[in-house]
Length: 65
Image 1 (tube, rainbow, N blue to C red):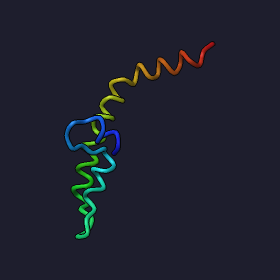
Image 2: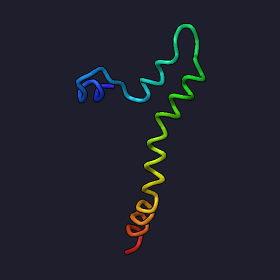
Image 3: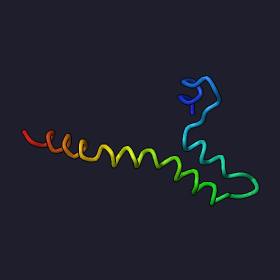
């Protein structure tokens, strides 16, 4: 949370802080938490699939000496 506050000019939150914001005194809004977690994790999954061949190539080149 510190980096999000320091590095941005606006009020920003990191993903864990954003996701815990759905837990209120009225209860846990599980549907909203699941939807937000999906939106937060999609860019990471897409980047992983896009870079998968480069990651495998780099790992295998580092193992061979």
